[in-house]
Amino acid sequence: MIDVVTGRVRAARTAVAQISAAPLMVRAGIFVTVFAGFALAFPAEVLSGRPILFLAVAALLPAFGPRRIWVTFTALVTVGGWLLATDGYGRPVALWRLLALAALLYLGHTLCALAALLPYNAVVDPELITRWLLRSAAVLLGTAVLGVLLLQAAGIGGETGYQWVTVLGLLVAVGTAGLLGWLLRRR
Image (cartoon, rainbow, N blue to C red; front, top):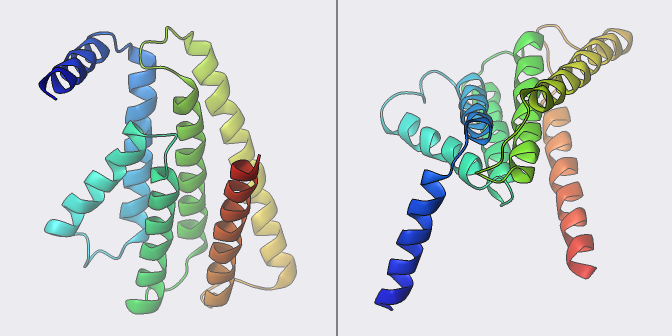
């Protein structure tokens, strides 16, 4: 038992000594993005004292385990904070906040995908990360423009938001994740 613990401590020390800058910066970007999403989603009344500490720890989880369930967990916590703020605290649905939150969720997810591909000790050309982020920015810009145009065409938005659309989107996202997980396990 002691040999196992000693071996793991030695492996952890070796891994920490071999961390390169690019994967570390990507993981720091994950933390900042997820934490900014929490700060934007949750009402200000909740973001004081212990809850902010718990949210900071939760934002660290996908940075350390981008291939694990933590990415989905933090996305669900963010959506839960949004629902708490709009339904529980009566914050009006603002289009800028909704677009910013969607952008942060997407950016956190795509940074986790990049971090999952990069080992801790990878030597990465900075151009790779720049192209990845530029592609993500193009997706975000296109999505924001299309989303605003569709909202205007449908006549939805302004000060009146539809809570059921948020809940329906959350259910579709969870259902899709569950279906993909089931398909991967079946294979």
